[in-house]
Image (cartoon, rainbow, N blue to C red; front, side, top):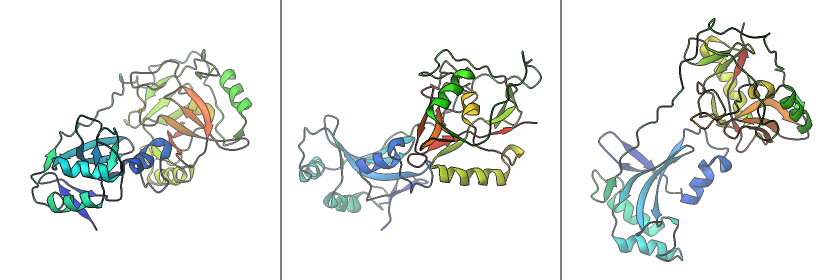
Length: 312
């Protein structure tokens, strides 16, 4: 049964009656992301009881991977809300978020859901969309003179041990907060002119400024294929970076967005896949939020990706 709540003349949301606060956390937190999510842009709306304040409140929540917002408070009679808490074996003093039960659901169906204008619905103010600061404009190509020869980094997929990755980080002078905190690989980033990519003249790599959303390695490969078929930024040979290529973007100091990256790159891809597997198991990732390289499963929660390609 589909149930809808009308928030305004133009905004109607669909209620997921099976969603609970605990299930929402397991579904949408990065650590518990479920494989059945089609996209991290997915959102769900559900009712729950917020009992963290002075009084219990019945709320309508909209939840996603990077989005948590209470759309409305339902000004239900106090005893109806408290009775739902009591039926779950809790007390008024229990500080917790509670799911609604069938009895409270029936009240919501009668008084709030599918109503043209419910007197119990108190809307909250929707937050304004955040505009990400991408820093000062990059210099145009030709305005940066390289002090030495171009650095050619390995690009082929391969399997690496932890000892090999540690050696790569130190040999190439890549920054890693644990393994090489003195590392400072220098880039020469320039504006590619399309607003979507940035060119590193030091390595000859063209990079996505943003990237691909959180998913498993299997889904990631399908998304890369789809992006190449469409010809992102006019090219059809985008790929996952090697560990060396991904680490070449790491900067010793975190920027204002909390990323160890040049600010021209989006903060929405905090840890990214590389094309290397770990011996004996797992995949190698580069984490720009924490300034380190690590290995993990490529399935749940998976990772983000910032694609690259050889330029010229």
